[in-house]
Image (cartoon, rainbow, N blue to C red; front, side, top):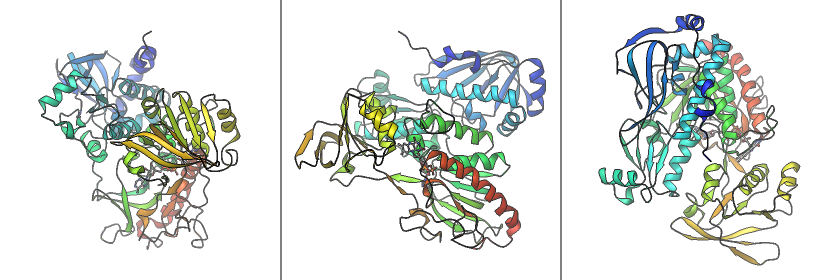
Amino acid sequence: MTTKSIIDTRREQMFPTLDATEIERVRRFGVPRAYDDGEALAKVGTPGHGLSIILSGHVDITQHHQSGARTPIVTHGPGAFMGELAQLSGRPALVDAHAKGRVEALIIAPDKLRALLIAEAELGERIMRSLILRRIGLLETGAGGPVIIGRAGNGDVLRLQGFLRRNGHPQQTLDPETDVEAKSLIERFEVDAGQLPIVLCPGGQLLRNPSEGELARCIGLVGRIDPKRVYDVAIVGAGPAGLAAGVYAGSEGLSALVLDCRAFGGQAGASSRIENYLGFPTGISGMALMARAYNQALKFGVEMAIPDESISLERDAGHSDSGALVLRLSNGETASARSVVIASGARYRRLNVADLDAFESTSVHYWASPLEAKLCAGQEVALVGAGNSAGQAVVFLAGNVAKVWLLVRGPDLSSSMSRYLVDRIAGLPNVEVLTQTNITGLEGRDGMLDAIRWRSSSGKEVRRPVRHLFLSIGADPNTDWLSGSGVALDSKGFISTGPDQNAGRSELETSRPGVFAIGDVRSGSVKRVAAAVGEGAQVVAALHRFLSTNRDGKPGLKM
Ligand SMILES: Cc1cc2nc3c(=O)[nH]c(=O)nc-3n(C[C@H](O)[C@H](O)[C@H](O)COP(=O)(O)OP(=O)(O)OC[C@H]3O[C@@H](n4cnc5c(N)ncnc54)[C@H](O)[C@@H]3O)c2cc1C
C-alpha cells in the first residue's frame, strides 16, 4: 500500500485560487512586478520577498536536489499564490520558482502579508492554512532543508535532526553506509569518516559537524538582532508561556522579540500527547500545539530569535533610551527592550548514576518523540519517572517498542501520576512497573548502551539488555543566567513575583521593575501548559500598565 502525501489529500486547501474580486481586495497590500520566461521568482536559500499572487502567466515550483535534479511540486496559474510559512518573516525560500512564459505578479512583502492576514479575516484564514499545509508538505519530503550526511543513530546526527525537527524545518539525512549519493558526496568534498556528520546547506555551504547555532545561521533560521532597536518587550523563552506572551503582545500592538536558546515549544514541545489542554478532547501532540502558537505569533509580527541564548539581564547605561533593559546573548549580541518577560521555564533533571554523560547523546533520552520511538522500535526500553510526563511517554513508547520497564523510586505511581494515566498503563500488556527501584549501573561502549542494572526493594540487582533509557524525573528552573541581575529567587531557584517583592507590583512582576516572570520558572506557578499560557496572556495587561506609566524614561526603571 502506498501512503498518500499531504499534497494528494489536501491539494485544494494547499493550492487555493483567488478570484478577481479577492485579488482586487488585496491589491492595496502589494506591488506589481513582471518576470520574463525562465526568470526566478524564488531561489532555495535566498531570502524570500513575500507572497506572490500570479496575475497572469504560469510559475513552476520545484524541489532542488543535491544531484542538481529538480522535482516538480506544482505549477501555479493566474489567481494562485506562491509562498509558504517562511514568507511571513522574510526567511530564505525552501523551494525554487521559475516563470514559465511571461509572468505578472502582485508581490506582498512580509510585513504587508501579516497586515493582510489580520485585515482580511476569511481570506487570511485560507491563505494562512495553505502556508501551513505547504510547510507540512515540505517537512514530509525534507524539501528545501539542509542535508545531514552521517551514520543513522550517531549522537551528532541525532542532535542536528532533533534541532531541525523541533524548529519545524525540513531536512534530509543520508547515511553513507547505505546511500550511494551520500558516499559520493563525501568523496567529492574529501571528508574523513571522523569529520562526520557534515551538513550541506541549501545555499551550497558545507558545514562540518556544526553547532545548532552555526546551522541555524547558515540556513537563515536566525538573523542578527538590531542592537539599536528598543522593543516594547523582550521575552526570554519560547515555551507555551513565552509564545502566549508573544501572541498577546503582538496582537495588542506591542513590538515584541522572543528569544529561545533551543527551539520553540519548550518542554511542551517534547510532550508526545497533551490530553488536558482545553479544547482538544482527543489530545494533541505538544509539537503540533506549539507550532500553531509559533505561527500565530509570527502572524502578529512577533520577531523570533531562535536559537539565541540570553546570558544576562542588565540596565542599559549607554543606550539613548535611558529606560532600556538589555539582554546579553551568548553569541555576543544584545537585545534591548523597555520591559522583559522571563519565560525560561525549567530543564530536565539528570540521574545520579556513573557514566550517564557517556551515553547521553545516543542512548539516554529526556523525551519520547517519534524520532526516539523509531530508534528503539521493537526493542526493550527502560523509563525512570513517576509523574504525568513519564506516564505519557510510557503510553506512547508502549505502542512502538517490544517492552517498557517503568522504574519508580517510590512505593506507587498513584501519588504522583494522574489516575487516567495510571489506569492506562495498567492496561498495557508490554509495560512492567517496578516500584522502589533504582538504577545502579549503565554498561556499553562508544556512547551506546548495551545493558542497564537496577536494584529493587528485594535488594537483588537485575541486569537487562536495554539499549535505550528514558529519564523523566522532574525539572529545575532555568535561572542561572540571572545571577547578578538582582532578580529575586526563592530557595529553590524559581523567580519570586508579586506585591511581596515590592508594594504596588503586579502579580507577575519580579523584584526588578519592568521585569516579569511567567510559567514554570515562576515561584508558585502551576506547572502545566494551560497555566503557562494563561500567565502569558495575563502578563500583557501588566506590560501595558507598566509601559503606559514608564514610557519616555519616567520613573520606575532604575535597576
Ligand atoms: C515530556 C513532558 C510532557 C508534559 N506533558 C504535559 C501535559 O500533558 N499537560 C500539561 O499541562 N503539562 C505538561 N508538561 C508540563 C508543561 O510542558 C510545562 O508546564 C510547560 O511547558 C511550561 O511552559 P513554560 O513556557 O513556562 O516553560 P518551558 O516549556 O520550560 O519553556 C522554556 C523555554 O525557555 C528556553 N530558555 C531557557 N533558558 C533560556 C535562556 N537563558 N535564553 C533563551 N531561552 C531560554 C528553553 O529552551 C525553553 O524552550 C509536560 C512536560 C514534559 C517535559
